[in-house]
Amino acid sequence: MNQISNNKNNQKNCGASRVNSGTIKMGHNLNFNETLQRHSFFTVKEKAWHNLGILLDKCPTSAEAICLAGLDYEVSKTPVFCIPENHTDIAISNRKVIPDKFATYREDTKSVFGIVGDRYTIVQNRDAFTFFDEIVGEGAAIYETAGCLGSGEVIFITAKLPDYIRVGNDDLIEQYLFLTSSHDGSGAIQIAFTPIRIVCNNTLNFALQNCSNKLTIRHTESAKDRLTQAHNVMGIVHKVSDELQQVFNQMSKVRITDPQLVSFIKQSLAPNKEALTKIEASEELSSRFKNMVNECYLYAVANHTQQLETTKGTVFGAYNAITGYFQNVKTYKNDEVKLKGILDGGSLNYTQKAFNKALSMI
Image: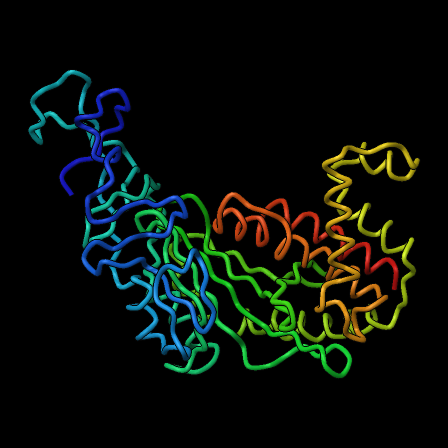
């Protein structure tokens, strides 16, 4: 890594302004690896992300997964140098070191990720997989998706846990751990417990009052050590799983009338307090909002996934109608926007309101 310039106006001397030819950014933002001539992503059994990457019949081991996902690259950091504006001589003697600033980059393509501070500690991709191996046994992690975005600055991994949350007799909810990490200094490592209802593949977003479903690890000196403390996350999983099973079963036993369902949908989809006030006062609402409510209501009463004993005419079904709308009905710009919205964006806010509303009804 020869140089990184902080002079935004002098583009010819700014190594950070160029994307190395080793990677290409696409509209969906999945990394394309020129060496392997494929996207850095795999999924098991079901196609995703515009049918890109590799589709597998069975879950790979961690050693296989890191290669299949194109995550087998090293990340390093280097000091940041400033070259004075209009200075044609870029000899080492003329470079000014920016104190306590470093650039992160991937070793194979030399693509620059971002600028970080001196306390920032790189957590290699293999360490993220090691974390999952420690949870379910070395080499036996049930990896279902993994990949990286952009030039490789953001990685994501999902691993399926062996147990289920059971609602009623037939409604099973799979349990997943979702990890995302960035190498550009834009965010911490996040590990979230995410239950997914099998019958309709809905991610059931929630935040219980007594425990969190997410663990955040900063890129500091202790980050790698904390990644190995899998028992902390599993403690979260067991606690949340047990409580959710009780809550979901209670929701499935509370009946809801059709007018109550409409009210539930309106209150959950209300974008702000002003809209909520209008709803409570039975005032006229926008056509866009009416369409959202109608589409969600149609999903709630007509979709085949809503016809189970646990969902038809129940509070649990009303809650699932909101999550189902955002994942199976609503149109998004692309899959990346959809994923971000469901896991940590606007869609999450709406489904969280629905979960809180459902809790208040039991």
